[in-house]
Length: 222
Image (cartoon, rainbow, N blue to C red; front, top):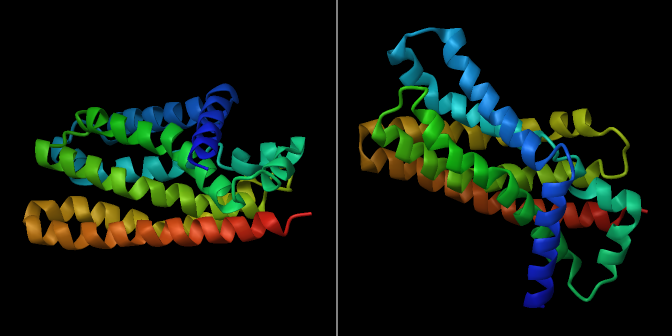
């Protein structure tokens, strides 16, 4: 089963790199959004440093939504989803693998680029490090929450807007505690650890409920 899961993971990564609108569009949108904000705010470095973590987190949330509607829709349209349901690999692992591949091609690159872009936002070393840690732990939650909306709208031709309306409210707690953890790092390790632990707990819950509800929604799709 491990071999089949790895094969599925590699397949999804290759498809994400080939199909337009997902892998590259999300990264370009993230880079563009974070780059133009300092020009709009002006040369106030103190203000940029204060709102920098929030800018990076908001950009990550919005970038994750790009291409998320194709997470299951492409396989639904060409019949691959039905074949995956009948494969020897349990369907819950299929859904989990597709979500992991989406995070690896969307959330992980955003996390890697965030410390570099933090220089444009005048973030110090401590803030840059905590932003990286919070995004590394929090962005998987964005993917698995988004997977629920992607599964519910898989049969819709243009379900991107509906998907965003469904999942954005569920992503707000991740956004809040991601930013709080970064800001609280200035107050000491204890403050950071408490918010970071809550963020990690929300991510674990998102993985469990995201995979379960997505599997249920896709299994009942005719």
